[in-house]
Amino acid sequence: MSLEAAREREWAAEPTGAPAAAGGRRTAWARRAAGHVLPAAAGPALALAAWEAWVRLDHVKPYLVPAPSRVAERLYADPWFFFAEGLKTLEGAALGFAAGASIAVLLAAVMSQARFLERSIFPLAILVKVTPIVAIAPLLTIWFGFGLMPKVFIAALIVFFPIMVNALIGFRSVNPNALALFESLAAGRAEVFFRLRLPSSLPYLFAAFRFSVPLSVIGAVVAEWFSGDRGLGSVIYIANNNLDMATAFAGIFTLALLGVALFLVTTAAERKVLFWHESNWDVR
Amino acid sequence: MTEQPHVLIDGVEMVYAGAGGSLRALEGIELAVRRGEFVSIIGPSGCGKSTLLRLVGGLLEPTAGRVLIDGRPPRRAQREKQIGFVFQDPSLLPWRNVIENVRLPLQLSRRGNGGAPAPDPGALVDLVGLREFSRYYPHQLSGGMQQRVALARCLVTAPSLLLMDEPFGALDEITRSAMRYELLRLWGSEAAGGGCTALFVTHSVTEAVLLSDRVAVLTPRPGRVAAVLDVDLPRPRSETMELEPDFLDHVRRLRGLLRERAPV
Image 1 (cartoon, chains in turn cyan, yellow):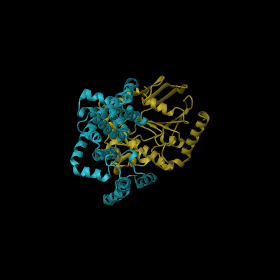
Image 2 (image 1 turned 180 degrees about the horizontal axis):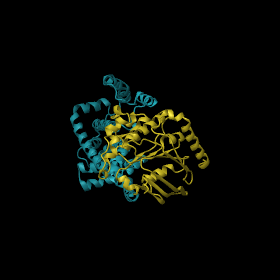
Image 3 (image 1 turned 60 degrees about the horizontal axis):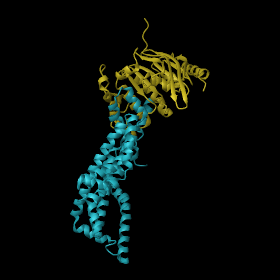
Image 4 (image 1 turned 90 degrees about the horizontal axis):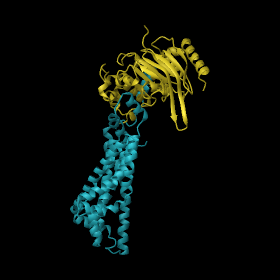
């Protein structure tokens, strides 16, 4: 029967992205390391070498620019100090990100329900967006004092707008036929939101997370400059004032490491959550 | 006493108000579909076929006239999950695997789901020949397989009315031909509720004759029912039948109706 034949043929066609055999995992890892990590590490290594050579050959003053080896020495002498200060910065950034992202997604969810809600909430959000954060940072010290609160506030403020805009686009970017299907089954607003709009928005949300996670660290550091007693921001600020460039650069280096770690975590989470989305398929 | 039609389309008119003026999509549509009947709607593109199907499904409200399902408004049938929709794209949820996609209608608006016991989603996945693929995600399946999942999904609530909007329109000819028989097999099978009423939108003449008891020909702008062709071919229909004079005669007559009454 040709119906059977057609089905056979369909089955025979190997589905794209079928689960890979477990045996190939180890070699795949090695190949990944060779293909991704080595080229990525080569650039920074070359830059550091050139920097070291320049400082040594040109006898640059250490209070202007320290050699990478001096920065490494400073880090090696007291790694836990930088680790602990880094954790303080991370704490402010993470809490701020969580607060800002939650409010942004919540407001976007409300706005996605009706145009008039969007028209009344969006201008407020724009007002928040266009106010320079650096201008209000000193005020926060007056209001909240030193410590965690100003960091959380500024980090939340800085991530709020991009996440809200992307979430709103995501909630609206729904396959129209899928929406018709939900309607033909008499699905309620809440069902449409949680089972259709929210999952559909995830690619847009993760796109926003990719750049707003580093933004939240910037927000925390800015807050630490103005009102920090702890954290890498204040470490760099104080070291700058003391012309202690080795410590300042060690702080900057730790911040960069923190940024890379957060980026990797975000990307890994995205691959895990969005395995079904075309942005995560390997190009063949 | 005359039997009440399962679907009654009574003087339906649909006017879309747009930025560039209003568009008269449908006008004076009259069509009564008996219970268990398979009716195709055929016509050139842009003649309002999809609009008509959406009106029957309660996704749109007509600007004049009325649509009744079992003598009641379509919204009521929606709440009782009497309507199974299949679209041209499978519109599966990409974050759900096959079995989860098929289960979706059972998870929505559960209050309304009293009454008839629903078929087992797993059995339906078997029925459409995807047993080995029930844990696969849509992006791992071919277009034909995805549309099979959509068919299984629409049958999971044991609907009494199937509304299909060019469901095989995006498939290649070989898959398409196989899917027609697959649909006939499902439509007649006990597991799928056995002989529900079907409204099928298509622009393929062969497809319309092969599947239907009757074919309604729609004219474009504004859409009107120009003619209704009775298909007097025995069931079950088979592939050998497609070459028989009787079948070809129906195809010829339908082509003729389309040419005369619904010129592009």
